[in-house]
Length: 112
Image (cartoon, rainbow, N blue to C red; front, side, top):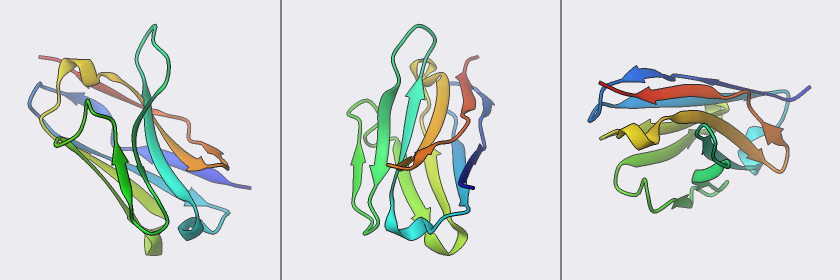
C-alpha cells in the first residue's frame, strides 16, 4: 500500500521559514515526479513546485526565489524549504506523487 506522509507544517510569523517533508512508503520513490500543491480556504488547489526524477524543478511564479523543492531518493523524501513566508502563503500543503496519489496535507499558517 502506497503512503505519502507530510510533516513540518505549523504557525510562523511573516518573514519566517518552514521546511515541509513528504516521505513515501510502499513504492519505488525515485522514478516519479514529486510535487507540492496548496489549497487556501475558498480557493482551488494550486501548484507550488515540482521536481522530476532527474532533479529538474519548476515553481509557481508566486513562490520563485522564496521556496526550494528538493528530494532525497535514499530517504524516499521530498522537501519544500519555504523562506520569507507571507500571509498569503497560508494554506494546506499537499504532497503529490505523479500519477500515483496525494498525501493527507499539512497546515501552514503565516500570521503575526
